[in-house]
Length: 165
Image (cartoon, rainbow, N blue to C red; front, top):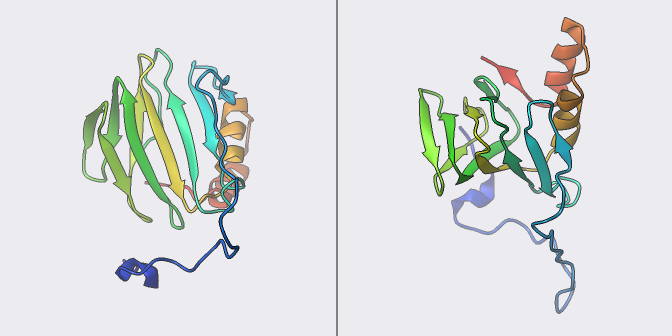
């Protein structure tokens, strides 16, 4: 696997080139309602979208419903994915086997890494992607349960850098 040139210990190129910094931070209060609710009771909160971060990352708080749900093993070609368990337990597929993550456990999946996740009983995790692609459309389309032909689904998955194994 190859990594960008700045992975050798140097910082990436400057993004901010102004002088003295700027007031650009924002706070999302913990009592902000979820941005998305799936029929199974899963909720997703958009903490930082790819658009908000200028494409650098996307961070989401994922809360499972009562029944076990989650995607089967898959991989992404252009984005890494990160899982940090906040509460409860989450089954994480690390490319070899399903492991159980508990509060405080973290799983990093580089580009091309096979992974999946499953949770229930209102377990909660942070889910992040780097760089930050338009994952919101992916989440929202699946939450709506739109019917797609086989060709439409294949094009949707390709557009969202998701390859099932």
